Image (tube, rainbow, N blue to C red; front, side, top):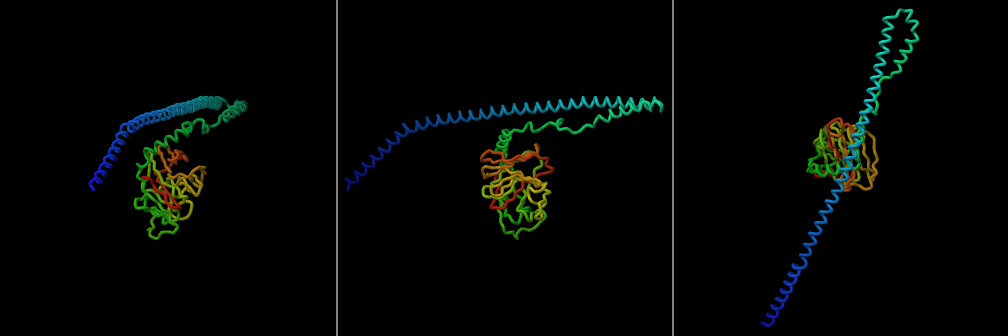
Length: 341
């Protein structure tokens, strides 16, 4: 019995010795190599970051220079057009004043007989005055803001704005506006469609009673705002902004998002996507269905932008003179959509 126990102890000691040798070899050979590779890969990663950001920075600087030159050129063109018009109308004023002075002089210093004799001259002067037309509105005299528009800048700006602002807006849905065909989550950020109209919702002036719509609890009057909506579970939804005056009752176009002057929305129905406002629908040929939809509202620039953060793609940009404070607005007719926070 003692011999067996001794043999077991010897075996255990040999195993421990082999284990110690393995650890020693790992520490002496593997870990230094791992450390060297980590240092090398970190250095390569830093170089890659610097290289790529340098390229992006260079591209941004080139685009900045190009756009500023375009803006300057457009400013010069508009300024030159205005100067040309100023000279033209100064000459026209001088000519009209000369004709008027001549006619007044005839009237005050010429007797009736002489006036009759000068009838042809008077007619010619009057005809000359009629040939000077009144000023007309001309687009050539206006600064063309599209000279500052750039797809590259738009995409970079959208990425930066969503990256820095998304999640900072505490967008929640106003329970008083939620359609009886929708169920609102406890945190006020998820809408779930229910084909059966709920009888638990107390009707009120704020509530949509037909279309599956809902408004956010807060509105935006100025500044830059961004929010994200998770739409991957729904094949029928609308996301955008609306005026507080948006009608809530009935099945007409007045309360249907995108079919009136009160709402601007990005919508999906099955595999079809479009931007809608005032009953006008702009088809959007998307190659993939976005899982999340970013919304950017720049009230200083009067611009509304929809963005796919996964692909870094600007889906649609709309510029308009928004007549009042805007509420984030939502509609869903399949499954659920959620505001990301």
